[in-house]
Length: 154
Image (tube, rainbow, N blue to C red; front, top):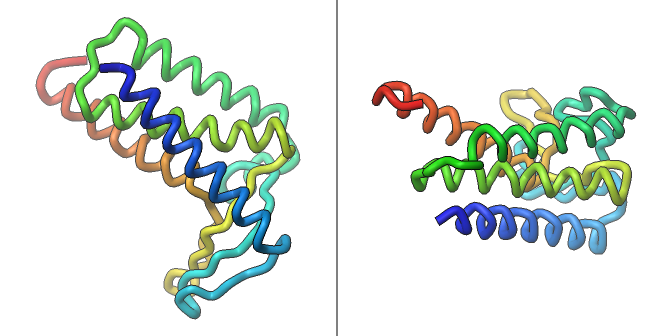
C-alpha cells in the first residue's frame, strides 16, 4: 500500500520537472504570457528563495531544510505506520513537491516558478507545480491529523 506514496511522489515530480523544462525551452527568463488578462499569466521567473522569496540567496539553508523535512515526514509520519488513503495521498504529494523543488536547488541553484496570479489587485508570488503539491499535501495532512485526533487516534 505504501507504494502508492512512491507513485504519487514520482508523478508529481515528473510533472513538475517536465513543466519546468517546457517553460525553459519555450519562454525567455521573465517573459510572461497572459492567459486571463489582469488575473492569470504564465511568467518564467527564477526564485533563489522560498515562498515570497523568503531566505533569498540562502540555498544551502533551503537544501538542508528540504532534506530535514523529507527525513521528518518519513520518520514520523510514514515509517512503521499503517496509513489510510488520505495519508498516502498527502505524504505522496508532499514528498513529490519537496523533491521537485529540491532538485531545482541542487542542480540549478534556484527554483523555476511560473504560475502568476493577480487577485483583487494583489500580485500573488509566482509558484510552480511542486508548490501546489506541497500546499495540497500540507492541507490533506492537517485534515488527516484532525480526523485522527477527533477519532481518538494519533
